[in-house]
Length: 142
Image (tube, rainbow, N blue to C red):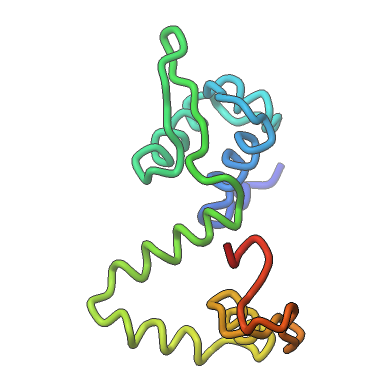
């Protein structure tokens, strides 16, 4: 047998898997439910610890379910989670304008066009004003 310890998961991977299980369920899950959904042989205590950490971060909310808690995500999907993380990072900096300027300066041309469209500067990701109004359209524009 080998004495090589098993490889560790990358940081945040287990949290992402737990959140994916919660999003897929479309209902509150207990740690035992999440453990069953993951099906990876994780200890219930490990799953409970991850859920408690996500609760401390405000990423999930919990309600009593008998002697345990049942957890529900507070963000609707992975994109919402990424947006929350971006807001958190921005909130940590005193010089927000410099942070935003550096962020925008590092965007690809396509992402910059998309951001401009989302901010209502008139062109879509393909550089075309979709409705001729000079405003962005679609779900992100409302």
